[in-house]
Image (tube, rainbow, N blue to C red; front, top):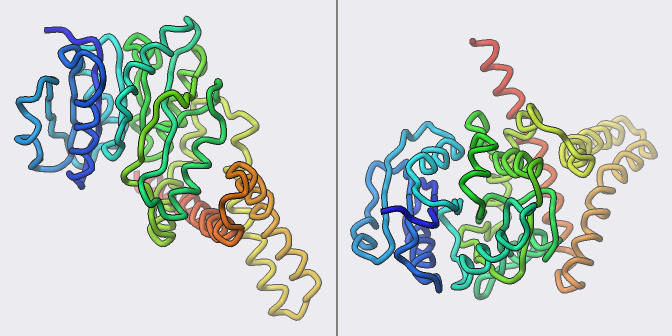
Length: 321
């Protein structure tokens, strides 16, 4: 039996959040018989499968090679999908009940609109780091955007096929690459009419530091094969430039060149204050300045380290081949 909408969820590791994600799909205020859920998991076994089998919504679990990228998992799910529309969800998001209805209406509203997504909202008693992430995610609302994160994406099957799916050569940054390709076909729209909670959002700064190193490893690889808008250039240049200036500041001060050391230190901190001022304004002055500065210091250092380690891995791989 054909389905109207296919929810495709790549999964590895934690199962509790996946269950919450799937349950939020079951709660959608649309006809459940028109929905199918495809979980592509890298776990050897998926213990929650018996708990959700037998629901009105069709469920399929596909086991995939643990070495595959998240893009490959999404493409595997898409190959098995029967829906006219595809929904790509991360395995740690909880959708609002009206999500599917809103996304369907928004996509059909304009022929030039090719991809839509709902806004992020805080979980109950959200820590400061989650609040920061939510504010940044919602910097632009109810408008066309240049990029959409891969946590909740709604598009027609035909659009997915026209861009040849997700880039399987990228470990991270695949959503930048994919949504940029879709953007070449038409509009990307970010809406406040429906929302999601990012259950797996970083809660502590140490956790964030490790994840940002991982997320940054495919930064430079994601450039290949797509156009790079001016707005993205700072994300590639600022983190390594900041670290370079910090190292220069330390060297200058160690050598007794205090004035030069102070100049390099100011140059290193400049992006923190520029980005921090923007974030403080976006939060309507609700976030503490101290937390914002801490966030960007950790963020830029982790991004620089992750980018450089990604380049090193790429060079080693090329040398070995």
